[in-house]
Length: 451
Ligand SMILES: [Zn+2]
Image 1 (cartoon, rainbow, N blue to C red):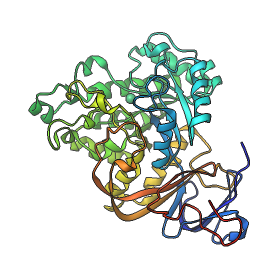
Image 2: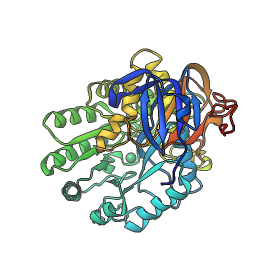
Image 3: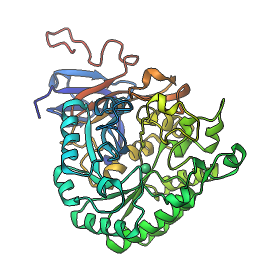
Protein backbone atom coordinates (compact mmCIF):
# COMPACT_ATOMS: atom_id res chain seq x y z
CA UNK A 1 0.00 0.00 0.00
CA UNK A 2 1.55 3.30 -1.04
CA UNK A 3 1.42 6.32 1.21
CA UNK A 4 -1.50 8.55 0.43
CA UNK A 5 -2.50 12.09 1.05
CA UNK A 6 -4.02 13.19 4.28
CA UNK A 7 -7.55 14.37 3.64
CA UNK A 8 -9.97 16.26 5.88
CA UNK A 9 -13.68 15.80 5.24
CA UNK A 10 -15.02 18.90 6.88
CA UNK A 11 -18.44 20.04 8.07
CA UNK A 12 -20.57 17.03 7.15
CA UNK A 13 -23.03 15.03 9.21
CA UNK A 14 -21.46 11.67 9.98
CA UNK A 15 -23.83 8.70 10.01
CA UNK A 16 -21.99 5.60 11.20
CA UNK A 17 -24.27 2.85 12.57
CA UNK A 18 -21.22 0.83 13.72
CA UNK A 19 -20.62 3.52 16.35
CA UNK A 20 -24.21 4.62 16.78
CA UNK A 21 -23.13 8.00 15.46
CA UNK A 22 -25.33 10.60 13.78
CA UNK A 23 -23.73 13.98 14.38
CA UNK A 24 -21.93 16.90 12.81
CA UNK A 25 -18.29 15.70 12.66
CA UNK A 26 -15.03 16.24 10.78
CA UNK A 27 -13.23 13.15 9.50
CA UNK A 28 -9.45 12.99 9.09
CA UNK A 29 -7.90 10.40 6.78
CA UNK A 30 -4.21 9.58 6.91
CA UNK A 31 -2.43 6.99 4.80
CA UNK A 32 -5.68 5.43 3.68
CA UNK A 33 -7.10 4.96 7.17
CA UNK A 34 -9.47 6.89 9.42
CA UNK A 35 -7.16 8.88 11.71
CA UNK A 36 -9.81 10.83 13.64
CA UNK A 37 -13.51 11.68 13.79
CA UNK A 38 -14.14 14.74 15.93
CA UNK A 39 -16.31 17.84 16.31
CA UNK A 40 -13.57 20.04 14.93
CA UNK A 41 -10.32 19.12 13.24
CA UNK A 42 -8.00 21.92 12.12
CA UNK A 43 -7.58 22.15 8.35
CA UNK A 44 -3.81 22.43 8.82
CA UNK A 45 -3.72 18.78 9.85
CA UNK A 46 -4.52 17.64 6.30
CA UNK A 47 -2.95 18.32 2.95
CA UNK A 48 -6.32 18.47 1.23
CA UNK A 49 -9.87 19.27 2.33
CA UNK A 50 -13.28 18.19 1.10
CA UNK A 51 -16.06 20.61 2.06
CA UNK A 52 -18.90 18.32 3.16
CA UNK A 53 -21.15 20.97 4.63
CA UNK A 54 -24.74 20.11 3.80
CA UNK A 55 -23.70 16.54 3.01
CA UNK A 56 -23.90 13.24 4.90
CA UNK A 57 -20.73 11.21 5.45
CA UNK A 58 -20.97 7.47 6.00
CA UNK A 59 -18.87 4.32 5.69
CA UNK A 60 -18.41 3.00 2.15
CA UNK A 61 -21.17 0.58 1.18
CA UNK A 62 -20.56 -3.18 1.04
CA UNK A 63 -22.25 -5.35 -1.58
CA UNK A 64 -22.19 -9.07 -0.89
CA UNK A 65 -23.62 -9.94 -4.28
CA UNK A 66 -22.67 -8.77 -7.74
CA UNK A 67 -21.57 -10.03 -11.13
CA UNK A 68 -18.57 -8.33 -12.75
CA UNK A 69 -18.54 -10.75 -15.73
CA UNK A 70 -14.74 -10.98 -15.91
CA UNK A 71 -13.25 -13.28 -17.11
CA UNK A 72 -15.25 -14.02 -20.21
CA UNK A 73 -18.13 -11.55 -20.35
CA UNK A 74 -16.52 -8.24 -21.26
CA UNK A 75 -19.36 -7.22 -23.59
CA UNK A 76 -21.55 -6.88 -20.47
CA UNK A 77 -19.06 -5.76 -17.83
CA UNK A 78 -15.41 -5.88 -16.77
CA UNK A 79 -13.74 -5.56 -13.41
CA UNK A 80 -12.79 -2.01 -14.42
CA UNK A 81 -16.27 -0.92 -15.54
CA UNK A 82 -18.08 -2.82 -12.80
CA UNK A 83 -15.93 -1.42 -10.03
CA UNK A 84 -16.39 2.10 -11.44
CA UNK A 85 -20.15 1.51 -11.39
CA UNK A 86 -19.91 0.29 -7.81
CA UNK A 87 -17.89 3.35 -6.78
CA UNK A 88 -20.51 5.60 -8.41
CA UNK A 89 -23.09 3.85 -6.24
CA UNK A 90 -21.09 4.46 -3.06
CA UNK A 91 -19.78 0.88 -2.79
CA UNK A 92 -16.19 0.35 -1.70
CA UNK A 93 -16.27 -3.43 -1.19
CA UNK A 94 -18.03 -5.85 -3.53
CA UNK A 95 -18.21 -9.63 -3.68
CA UNK A 96 -18.30 -10.90 -7.26
CA UNK A 97 -20.00 -14.17 -8.08
CA UNK A 98 -18.20 -17.05 -9.78
CA UNK A 99 -20.45 -17.65 -12.82
CA UNK A 100 -17.83 -16.28 -15.19
CA UNK A 101 -16.15 -17.98 -18.14
CA UNK A 102 -14.20 -19.89 -17.02
CA UNK A 103 -16.06 -20.42 -13.75
CA UNK A 104 -14.19 -19.21 -10.67
CA UNK A 105 -13.72 -22.73 -9.32
CA UNK A 106 -9.91 -22.89 -9.13
CA UNK A 107 -7.20 -20.94 -7.30
CA UNK A 108 -5.93 -19.71 -10.69
CA UNK A 109 -9.18 -17.89 -11.44
CA UNK A 110 -9.47 -16.53 -7.88
CA UNK A 111 -5.95 -15.13 -8.22
CA UNK A 112 -6.68 -13.79 -11.71
CA UNK A 113 -9.64 -11.79 -10.34
CA UNK A 114 -7.55 -10.48 -7.44
CA UNK A 115 -4.69 -9.43 -9.75
CA UNK A 116 -7.06 -7.84 -12.29
CA UNK A 117 -8.79 -6.02 -9.45
CA UNK A 118 -5.49 -4.64 -8.19
CA UNK A 119 -4.71 -3.40 -11.71
CA UNK A 120 -8.12 -2.22 -12.86
CA UNK A 121 -10.51 -1.79 -9.94
CA UNK A 122 -10.85 1.39 -7.95
CA UNK A 123 -12.39 -0.44 -4.98
CA UNK A 124 -12.01 -3.68 -3.01
CA UNK A 125 -13.18 -6.67 -5.06
CA UNK A 126 -13.51 -10.02 -3.29
CA UNK A 127 -13.99 -13.12 -5.42
CA UNK A 128 -16.68 -15.59 -4.40
CA UNK A 129 -15.51 -19.03 -5.51
CA UNK A 130 -17.73 -21.83 -6.78
CA UNK A 131 -19.03 -24.51 -4.43
CA UNK A 132 -18.82 -27.19 -7.15
CA UNK A 133 -16.55 -27.77 -10.12
CA UNK A 134 -17.70 -25.74 -13.10
CA UNK A 135 -20.85 -24.98 -11.06
CA UNK A 136 -22.23 -28.30 -12.23
CA UNK A 137 -23.51 -29.17 -8.77
CA UNK A 138 -21.78 -32.55 -8.74
CA UNK A 139 -18.25 -32.55 -7.31
CA UNK A 140 -17.15 -30.11 -4.66
CA UNK A 141 -14.49 -27.64 -5.74
CA UNK A 142 -11.27 -27.62 -3.70
CA UNK A 143 -12.71 -25.30 -1.08
CA UNK A 144 -9.57 -25.18 1.06
CA UNK A 145 -7.39 -24.16 -1.88
CA UNK A 146 -9.95 -21.57 -2.97
CA UNK A 147 -9.95 -20.00 0.48
CA UNK A 148 -6.15 -20.00 0.55
CA UNK A 149 -6.11 -18.26 -2.85
CA UNK A 150 -8.25 -15.42 -1.48
CA UNK A 151 -11.89 -16.34 -2.02
CA UNK A 152 -14.19 -14.57 0.46
CA UNK A 153 -17.11 -17.01 0.30
CA UNK A 154 -18.40 -19.99 -1.69
CA UNK A 155 -21.42 -19.96 -3.99
CA UNK A 156 -22.72 -21.50 -7.18
CA UNK A 157 -24.81 -18.35 -7.68
CA UNK A 158 -26.49 -18.13 -11.02
CA UNK A 159 -27.33 -21.77 -10.38
CA UNK A 160 -28.44 -23.67 -7.28
CA UNK A 161 -26.62 -26.59 -5.67
CA UNK A 162 -29.43 -28.97 -6.55
CA UNK A 163 -28.13 -32.12 -4.85
CA UNK A 164 -28.85 -31.88 -1.13
CA UNK A 165 -25.97 -34.17 -0.16
CA UNK A 166 -23.52 -32.02 -2.13
CA UNK A 167 -24.83 -28.95 -0.30
CA UNK A 168 -24.55 -30.77 3.02
CA UNK A 169 -20.90 -31.63 2.31
CA UNK A 170 -20.22 -28.07 1.16
CA UNK A 171 -21.61 -26.70 4.43
CA UNK A 172 -19.59 -29.22 6.43
CA UNK A 173 -16.33 -28.23 4.72
CA UNK A 174 -17.18 -24.53 4.78
CA UNK A 175 -17.76 -24.87 8.52
CA UNK A 176 -14.30 -26.39 9.01
CA UNK A 177 -12.81 -23.55 6.94
CA UNK A 178 -14.88 -20.93 8.78
CA UNK A 179 -16.30 -19.66 5.49
CA UNK A 180 -19.91 -18.89 4.53
CA UNK A 181 -21.83 -20.49 1.68
CA UNK A 182 -23.87 -17.94 -0.31
CA UNK A 183 -27.01 -19.75 -1.39
CA UNK A 184 -28.81 -19.22 -4.68
CA UNK A 185 -31.92 -21.07 -3.53
CA UNK A 186 -33.83 -22.42 -6.48
CA UNK A 187 -35.41 -25.74 -7.40
CA UNK A 188 -34.90 -25.91 -11.15
CA UNK A 189 -37.62 -28.53 -11.53
CA UNK A 190 -40.13 -26.04 -10.09
CA UNK A 191 -38.75 -23.09 -12.06
CA UNK A 192 -38.89 -25.22 -15.24
CA UNK A 193 -39.21 -22.76 -18.12
CA UNK A 194 -40.83 -20.04 -16.00
CA UNK A 195 -39.83 -16.47 -16.79
CA UNK A 196 -41.65 -14.45 -14.10
CA UNK A 197 -43.50 -14.83 -10.79
CA UNK A 198 -46.43 -17.23 -10.99
CA UNK A 199 -49.53 -15.22 -10.21
CA UNK A 200 -52.37 -13.21 -11.69
CA UNK A 201 -50.06 -11.18 -13.86
CA UNK A 202 -48.23 -14.12 -15.42
CA UNK A 203 -51.65 -15.64 -16.10
CA UNK A 204 -52.94 -12.47 -17.71
CA UNK A 205 -49.81 -11.99 -19.81
CA UNK A 206 -49.66 -15.63 -20.83
CA UNK A 207 -46.08 -15.96 -19.55
CA UNK A 208 -44.86 -19.06 -17.74
CA UNK A 209 -44.65 -18.58 -13.98
CA UNK A 210 -42.07 -19.47 -11.35
CA UNK A 211 -43.82 -20.52 -8.09
CA UNK A 212 -42.65 -19.21 -4.70
CA UNK A 213 -41.85 -22.79 -3.75
CA UNK A 214 -38.99 -22.85 -6.24
CA UNK A 215 -37.08 -20.64 -3.80
CA UNK A 216 -38.81 -21.39 -0.49
CA UNK A 217 -38.35 -25.18 -0.54
CA UNK A 218 -34.59 -24.86 -1.09
CA UNK A 219 -34.32 -22.11 1.53
CA UNK A 220 -35.96 -24.49 4.04
CA UNK A 221 -33.79 -27.41 2.93
CA UNK A 222 -30.54 -25.47 3.17
CA UNK A 223 -31.43 -23.88 6.53
CA UNK A 224 -31.99 -27.39 7.89
CA UNK A 225 -28.61 -28.47 6.48
CA UNK A 226 -26.94 -25.41 7.99
CA UNK A 227 -28.49 -26.20 11.37
CA UNK A 228 -27.36 -29.79 11.18
CA UNK A 229 -23.79 -29.14 10.02
CA UNK A 230 -23.10 -25.83 11.74
CA UNK A 231 -22.03 -24.42 8.36
CA UNK A 232 -22.74 -20.71 7.89
CA UNK A 233 -25.40 -20.20 5.25
CA UNK A 234 -26.14 -16.83 3.66
CA UNK A 235 -29.32 -16.82 1.59
CA UNK A 236 -29.03 -14.65 -1.50
CA UNK A 237 -31.69 -12.35 -2.94
CA UNK A 238 -34.69 -13.51 -0.84
CA UNK A 239 -37.80 -12.73 -2.87
CA UNK A 240 -40.96 -14.01 -1.23
CA UNK A 241 -42.97 -14.42 1.98
CA UNK A 242 -42.58 -18.21 2.14
CA UNK A 243 -38.80 -17.99 2.10
CA UNK A 244 -39.01 -15.31 4.81
CA UNK A 245 -41.11 -17.67 6.95
CA UNK A 246 -38.53 -20.47 6.59
CA UNK A 247 -35.64 -18.16 7.48
CA UNK A 248 -37.55 -16.80 10.47
CA UNK A 249 -38.20 -20.35 11.70
CA UNK A 250 -34.61 -21.56 11.37
CA UNK A 251 -33.06 -18.41 12.80
CA UNK A 252 -35.30 -18.78 15.84
CA UNK A 253 -34.00 -22.33 16.25
CA UNK A 254 -30.43 -21.01 16.21
CA UNK A 255 -29.31 -22.01 12.71
CA UNK A 256 -26.24 -19.98 11.62
CA UNK A 257 -28.20 -18.40 8.79
CA UNK A 258 -28.09 -14.87 7.38
CA UNK A 259 -29.92 -13.44 4.40
CA UNK A 260 -29.90 -10.54 1.98
CA UNK A 261 -32.62 -8.77 0.01
CA UNK A 262 -32.19 -6.69 -3.14
CA UNK A 263 -33.34 -3.13 -3.83
CA UNK A 264 -35.56 -4.42 -6.65
CA UNK A 265 -37.38 -6.97 -4.51
CA UNK A 266 -37.92 -4.26 -1.86
CA UNK A 267 -39.31 -1.70 -4.29
CA UNK A 268 -40.89 -3.48 -7.27
CA UNK A 269 -43.47 -6.19 -7.92
CA UNK A 270 -44.37 -8.39 -10.87
CA UNK A 271 -46.46 -5.49 -12.17
CA UNK A 272 -43.20 -3.94 -13.38
CA UNK A 273 -43.05 -6.60 -16.08
CA UNK A 274 -45.89 -4.93 -17.96
CA UNK A 275 -45.35 -1.30 -16.92
CA UNK A 276 -45.19 0.77 -20.09
CA UNK A 277 -45.13 -0.56 -23.63
CA UNK A 278 -44.59 -4.26 -24.14
CA UNK A 279 -43.02 -6.55 -21.60
CA UNK A 280 -40.01 -5.09 -19.87
CA UNK A 281 -36.96 -7.31 -19.92
CA UNK A 282 -35.37 -5.02 -17.31
CA UNK A 283 -37.95 -6.41 -14.88
CA UNK A 284 -36.86 -9.97 -15.58
CA UNK A 285 -34.56 -11.49 -13.01
CA UNK A 286 -34.07 -14.52 -10.79
CA UNK A 287 -35.65 -14.85 -8.39
CA UNK A 288 -38.51 -12.97 -10.02
CA UNK A 289 -40.27 -9.89 -8.70
CA UNK A 290 -43.22 -11.23 -6.71
CA UNK A 291 -46.52 -9.79 -5.44
CA UNK A 292 -47.14 -6.72 -3.28
CA UNK A 293 -47.82 -9.07 -0.38
CA UNK A 294 -44.35 -10.60 -0.81
CA UNK A 295 -42.75 -7.17 -1.08
CA UNK A 296 -44.37 -6.10 2.19
CA UNK A 297 -43.15 -9.22 3.93
CA UNK A 298 -39.58 -8.57 2.72
CA UNK A 299 -39.69 -5.03 4.09
CA UNK A 300 -41.01 -6.24 7.45
CA UNK A 301 -38.40 -9.02 7.54
CA UNK A 302 -35.58 -6.55 6.95
CA UNK A 303 -37.01 -4.35 9.68
CA UNK A 304 -37.33 -7.15 12.24
CA UNK A 305 -33.90 -8.62 11.45
CA UNK A 306 -35.07 -11.82 9.74
CA UNK A 307 -33.27 -10.47 6.68
CA UNK A 308 -29.87 -9.06 7.57
CA UNK A 309 -28.70 -6.75 4.82
CA UNK A 310 -29.24 -5.33 1.37
CA UNK A 311 -27.26 -6.57 -1.65
CA UNK A 312 -27.70 -5.42 -5.24
CA UNK A 313 -27.26 -8.60 -7.30
CA UNK A 314 -25.86 -6.22 -9.94
CA UNK A 315 -26.22 -8.44 -13.02
CA UNK A 316 -25.17 -6.69 -16.20
CA UNK A 317 -26.29 -7.99 -19.58
CA UNK A 318 -25.22 -6.20 -22.74
CA UNK A 319 -27.92 -4.09 -24.43
CA UNK A 320 -28.32 -6.44 -27.45
CA UNK A 321 -28.89 -9.46 -25.20
CA UNK A 322 -31.65 -7.74 -23.20
CA UNK A 323 -33.20 -6.28 -26.37
CA UNK A 324 -35.08 -9.51 -26.96
CA UNK A 325 -38.47 -11.10 -26.48
CA UNK A 326 -39.28 -11.35 -22.76
CA UNK A 327 -39.14 -15.15 -22.86
CA UNK A 328 -35.70 -15.10 -24.49
CA UNK A 329 -33.98 -12.30 -22.55
CA UNK A 330 -31.46 -13.26 -19.85
CA UNK A 331 -32.36 -12.89 -16.16
CA UNK A 332 -30.87 -9.98 -14.21
CA UNK A 333 -30.59 -6.20 -13.86
CA UNK A 334 -27.81 -3.79 -12.95
CA UNK A 335 -28.03 -2.22 -9.51
CA UNK A 336 -24.91 -0.48 -8.20
CA UNK A 337 -25.58 3.10 -9.32
CA UNK A 338 -29.29 3.11 -8.46
CA UNK A 339 -29.31 1.24 -5.13
CA UNK A 340 -28.96 4.11 -2.68
CA UNK A 341 -31.08 6.55 -4.70
CA UNK A 342 -33.93 4.08 -5.07
CA UNK A 343 -33.91 2.96 -1.43
CA UNK A 344 -33.53 6.47 -0.04
CA UNK A 345 -36.36 7.75 -2.23
CA UNK A 346 -38.62 4.76 -1.58
CA UNK A 347 -38.15 4.40 2.17
CA UNK A 348 -36.26 7.22 3.89
CA UNK A 349 -37.74 10.18 2.03
CA UNK A 350 -41.21 8.72 2.60
CA UNK A 351 -40.56 8.42 6.32
CA UNK A 352 -40.67 4.62 6.68
CA UNK A 353 -36.96 4.23 7.53
CA UNK A 354 -34.43 6.46 9.16
CA UNK A 355 -31.31 7.26 7.17
CA UNK A 356 -29.35 5.42 9.86
CA UNK A 357 -31.35 2.23 9.25
CA UNK A 358 -30.68 2.31 5.51
CA UNK A 359 -26.96 3.06 5.97
CA UNK A 360 -26.74 0.21 8.48
CA UNK A 361 -28.15 -2.27 5.97
CA UNK A 362 -25.55 -1.18 3.41
CA UNK A 363 -22.52 -1.02 5.74
CA UNK A 364 -22.41 -2.57 9.19
CA UNK A 365 -25.01 -5.28 8.48
CA UNK A 366 -23.20 -6.85 5.48
CA UNK A 367 -19.88 -6.53 7.35
CA UNK A 368 -21.45 -8.42 10.27
CA UNK A 369 -22.49 -11.26 7.95
CA UNK A 370 -18.76 -11.83 7.38
CA UNK A 371 -17.29 -10.51 10.61
CA UNK A 372 -15.30 -8.07 8.44
CA UNK A 373 -13.48 -4.90 9.50
CA UNK A 374 -15.13 -2.73 6.83
CA UNK A 375 -18.34 -0.76 7.07
CA UNK A 376 -17.20 1.58 9.85
CA UNK A 377 -15.56 4.95 10.28
CA UNK A 378 -13.92 3.77 13.49
CA UNK A 379 -10.41 5.11 14.06
CA UNK A 380 -7.83 2.91 12.34
CA UNK A 381 -10.32 1.41 9.87
CA UNK A 382 -9.71 1.55 6.12
CA UNK A 383 -10.87 4.99 4.94
CA UNK A 384 -13.80 3.77 2.85
CA UNK A 385 -16.13 6.76 2.86
CA UNK A 386 -19.28 7.66 0.96
CA UNK A 387 -20.69 11.19 0.76
CA UNK A 388 -24.41 11.68 0.23
CA UNK A 389 -26.57 14.60 -0.82
CA UNK A 390 -30.16 14.27 0.32
CA UNK A 391 -33.40 16.01 -0.51
CA UNK A 392 -32.48 17.39 -3.92
CA UNK A 393 -34.58 15.99 -6.74
CA UNK A 394 -32.83 14.52 -9.75
CA UNK A 395 -33.61 12.04 -12.47
CA UNK A 396 -31.75 8.73 -12.42
CA UNK A 397 -30.63 8.74 -16.04
CA UNK A 398 -27.97 7.09 -18.19
CA UNK A 399 -25.43 9.78 -17.29
CA UNK A 400 -25.22 8.10 -13.87
CA UNK A 401 -24.56 4.63 -15.25
CA UNK A 402 -20.91 3.56 -15.40
CA UNK A 403 -21.71 -0.07 -16.14
CA UNK A 404 -21.21 -1.29 -19.71
CA UNK A 405 -24.82 -2.49 -19.51
CA UNK A 406 -28.08 -0.53 -19.33
CA UNK A 407 -30.53 -3.08 -17.99
CA UNK A 408 -32.05 -1.02 -15.20
CA UNK A 409 -35.79 -0.57 -14.55
CA UNK A 410 -35.08 2.78 -12.87
CA UNK A 411 -33.71 4.74 -15.82
CA UNK A 412 -35.75 7.95 -16.01
CA UNK A 413 -37.11 7.69 -12.46
CA UNK A 414 -37.11 10.75 -10.19
CA UNK A 415 -35.06 10.32 -7.03
CA UNK A 416 -34.20 12.52 -4.07
CA UNK A 417 -30.97 11.21 -2.53
CA UNK A 418 -27.70 10.42 -4.21
CA UNK A 419 -24.08 9.48 -3.77
CA UNK A 420 -21.86 12.48 -4.57
CA UNK A 421 -18.40 11.15 -3.74
CA UNK A 422 -16.74 7.89 -2.80
CA UNK A 423 -13.31 7.29 -1.27
CA UNK A 424 -11.76 3.83 -1.10
CA UNK A 425 -8.90 3.48 1.37
CA UNK A 426 -8.59 7.25 1.24
CA UNK A 427 -8.46 7.48 -2.56
CA UNK A 428 -11.23 9.42 -4.32
CA UNK A 429 -12.82 6.89 -6.69
CA UNK A 430 -16.00 8.74 -7.64
CA UNK A 431 -17.00 12.41 -7.75
CA UNK A 432 -20.38 13.78 -8.84
CA UNK A 433 -19.30 16.90 -10.67
CA UNK A 434 -22.76 18.41 -10.31
CA UNK A 435 -22.24 18.47 -6.53
CA UNK A 436 -18.57 19.50 -6.75
CA UNK A 437 -18.37 21.75 -9.84
CA UNK A 438 -14.95 23.08 -8.82
CA UNK A 439 -13.58 19.61 -8.04
CA UNK A 440 -13.73 17.45 -4.96
CA UNK A 441 -11.06 19.31 -3.00
CA UNK A 442 -11.28 22.85 -1.68
CA UNK A 443 -8.80 25.06 -3.50
CA UNK A 444 -6.32 26.73 -1.17
CA UNK A 445 -4.48 29.97 -1.69
CA UNK A 446 -1.29 28.27 -0.52
CA UNK A 447 0.96 26.30 -2.86
CA UNK A 448 -0.48 22.98 -1.77
CA UNK A 449 -3.78 23.59 -3.55
CA UNK A 450 -5.99 20.58 -4.00
CA UNK A 451 -6.21 18.87 -7.35
ZN1 LIG B 1 -28.55 -15.77 -7.74
